[in-house]
Image (cartoon, rainbow, N blue to C red; front, side):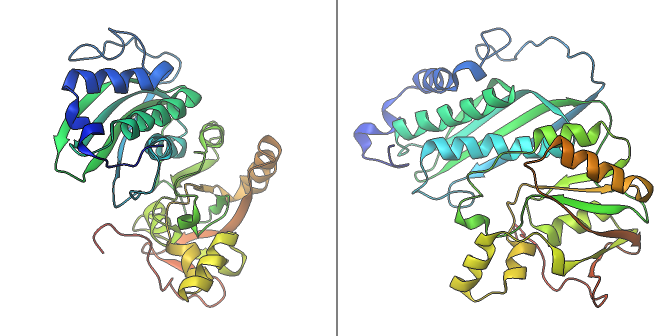
Length: 320
């Protein structure tokens, strides 16, 4: 793997815009359909998608120095860009359809690293059935790299946050915390699980955990409900405990606010929670599922069921 930035003789500055586009499109491989459905014109011309009436759209980026560092190889950075977008689609219960890829590239970025980035993005997209049908490349300042993906998916119904009701039971997939030790780059979006949840009307609301449970849970609740959480029984990743030993922060704090867990947090009507839990475990025996609490009338706070006190930590904030 080449380094992200390199000597001038191997940088993207030696390539024309047309050569850059050709390299990226070729490296996207099977994820990029042929023209006119794919790259080659000012617009991609796509057939309508039948069978699913709700279109779910999302957009997200990876930025050098924020979502990965200069030691990260291009393939992993490209995979992360695709998968963090697919995690949003998973929370909507949507099947991926097509995407537009925008790149802001410093002139000193290594051309091989860029090719690897496109390879990674293409592989992750093809694996999920996502087609990258076009986009844009723009020159940025030296040392800069920003990849942005705008994604379309289709679902059978609207499943999103802020749709829960008092009495609903809260569940979370996977484990929480310690993403800095690798999960922030190496994770699989819960697409199959999200589609399954969307197919069950008893599931009332869903979001993915990208900013940490302490932030994403109030986002799911909105301003009319609180959550009573069994903090003592949260599924905490081993990596959170390792990280706690290195920085001195409590393990629970890492589980609540590290972010980039990319797990699903969802609510289920109380009278169907047992049934949904049992059926989910049967459908996805390898996906950990934990019942973490209940929804009640309130103002958007998450409280520990043990003492009724609100969480004392917040999740990740871009400007906090």
